[in-house]
Length: 270
Ligand code: SAM
Image (tube, rainbow, N blue to C red; front, side, top):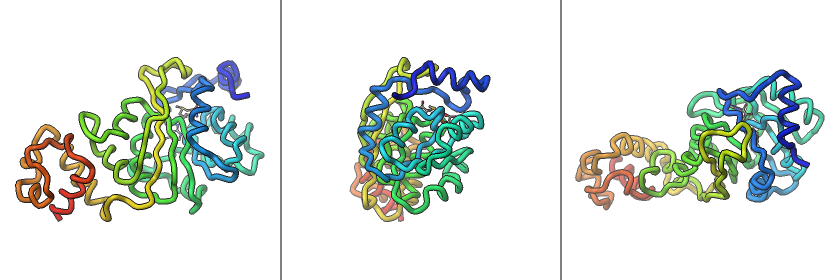
């Protein structure tokens, strides 16, 4: 049986610990939603999984039972201790204690080392501070992941998957360049303990074999330039010449462009 709320509370209380807001500790206590994460992960025996923020290990337990080889990164020292006690003996479990990120654009070397060159899946109820930088970094700089099933704040999920409009921005472009994605399910605050103040979404991202362009860095620079001035027109931002070389309507605002058009503008700007 998966961990119940009572068990999670007992594990924390035994260490005199309460959920830490600064680490985004909202534990998932809805087992139907957890099952949906697992189903979307499509795990096979021996699949390598990166779980960021395993917490008390509720999802970890299911991943291990499904036969996955789990590398888990947990920043909280007390939770890391709980995890070592629960899974430390298992060969298919490796714990990296510390921040999964080594900066805004880099995954911690210890995490990369633990995963190695194997293809892996990211399956995680992500801490809110980490979701956007981690997913953008994975999309743009790492080729050996195949699928991500991640719980994020609903607003972040909207930005990840936006193809135009107010949520469309650099994060959507990074994901759109490398992945196909969809919402698996939305979750109200009551699915967590303690309850967050916002709704959440589980998002499935599948990494494409080939990116939609060759020079991701240049396209991301163009995306940053455009979205820093999202109220202006393409003409005002990059000029008529670049817009017309890319075949893009110069009167559009950045949020009306497609990822392909942003690639075109980056190419035309040279
Ligand atoms: N996996 C558990 C669950 O589903 O109930 C807990 C998820 S909770 C939303 C986020 C977890 O990420 C917490 O365990 C927290 O300590 C951990 N965490 C927060 N920031 C982190 C970071 N930068 N690197 C690694 N883990 C982090």
